[in-house]
Amino acid sequence: MKGNEAAAEGAIAGGCRFFFGYPITPQNEIPEYMALHMPEVGGVYLQAESEVAAINMVFGAGAAGARVMTSSSGPGIALMQEGLSYIIGARVPCLVIDVCRGGPGLGNIGTSQSDYWMATRGGGHGDGRCITFAPATLQEQYDLCREAFDVAERYRHPVMILSEAALGQMMEPVVLQPRAEPPPLEKPWQLGGPRHGRPKRVINSLYAQPPDLAVQNRELAALYEQVTREQTRWQELGDDDPEVLIVAFGIPARCSETAMERVAERGIRTRLVRPISLFPFPYEPIRRWAQVAPHTLVAEASIGQMVDDVRLAVGDASQVTLFPVLGGLITTPEEIATEICRIVGR
Amino acid sequence: MPRTDTPLEIPEGMEPVATRPQCLSDMPFTYCPGCTHGTIHRLIAEVIDELGVADRAVAIAPVGCAVWAYEFFDLDGIQAPHGRAPAVATGVKRAAPATVIFTYQGDGDLAGIGIAEVTHAAARGERITCFFVNNAVYGMTQGQMAPTTLLGQKTTTSPRGRDLRRDGFPLRICELLATLDGAAYVERVAVIDPPSIRNAKRAIRRAFQVQLEDRGFGLVEFLSICPT
Image 1 (cartoon, rainbow over the protein chains, first blue to last red):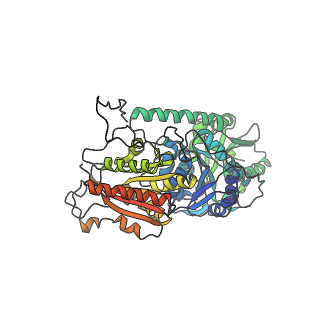
Image 2: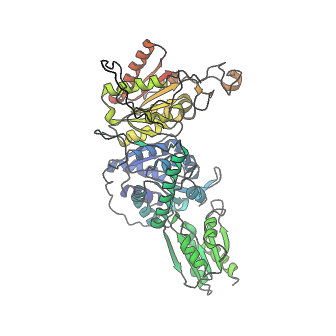
Image 3: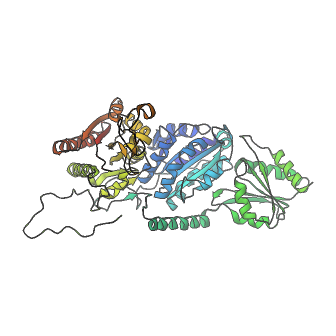
């Protein structure tokens, strides 16, 4: 199936029953799939008047305890930053999928990872982050979307999937699971529905007194520490004594895998660390392998965004080289293999 | 927010003839003396009590002077981003259709930054009720020009009066929304004297009734006073 359809079906299988969105290429198959299939599971699909409205509809449905999501691409995700900040501040679980296209501005609809900063530093203004996962295959895209609601509800926090135009548009086989019923609505904080005399509940990000906001933000900081302990995910493969450590996620990680096979024919030893969670970022395995490998290659489809995090992990232990793929172009294993050869001088 | 923890004591031999509506909390209002927000809060609370829907009502608070509305109503509540209350209300209503939901928004919130959200909620015939408090200025930020500021009206950002050539005309929200088929009930009321206040309460009741009767979107505009 198509990647965007895999994402949408994954979300439904994970119990998502409410979708609010607005059309934008290259993610249109997600709302189209939801419009067609949500009624089969008694869910609601609603096309909003804008991404601004869509994320606030997500806010409302999430506050009522529903498993709810939206999807968009860079320009639309940018419009959602305000709502995301309120959702983080008010601690409402939900899923946001960014099928990343080229930017800045209107950019183009080519495949890209240039929303890395927005996804990992964003969640709008203020002291919040987004728990962000990045798939590299359509199976992983399906699985992450299916699991996202459990993660979001566990931490009472939004989850973002940073996908890419290529992952949205390409086709691969995907093993589907039965569609799960969402867990019973009642959560100790949700509102709406009969109160039956219980005290009122408020979903709110306003803490007008600085000491109160400080307490709230300390709780968020503690939550992010817990998320870092429990949700840091990565995959690694390759040689145990690498000359070159490669750090890449998504499509560039897949190209890197093939490139590693090519350079192995020339006797060049490499190891790939592929971040699956972008926040929390897998600093530790990168730090560990950078102690071994004199060279670190960062391949990413952006001007050099994830490389910031890699440099934080590597420090002075290894020479970091950035291989940026820009403008919505797609890289090839040959290009990455050539870059690896250039770095090691063979 | 300060909270009054001492209940009013009724002196010996006297009995209360007017009390706080049940769904208003004991939180003291943050509104300025002379402001009509308090009157409007009370009227909405009285109607919710009388309709017997407090148990399933949700209040969506705006950004602006009424940002703490969720504190003043003893109801489930959400504090929404600036102008987005009708979108938040849409999400709640779709996820929990039995909820009786209202937004409480000022003129900057609803007629300025949030005009898209309220217009499309009305066009969809969203089963929500919007209370639009129009005092023709941005009150919380100390009195800047609003989308509903009248021509010639002086504000901190129109110090020589709203200028037609520079600022254009004020918006007429009720007239705009009344053209939409999804809007089942739209009315503008004043809250300046006992007859107009009684009339405003009647309008609030009708705006809730179109939601309860599943007829469509409802909005009441209050011509309000900002003493600041």
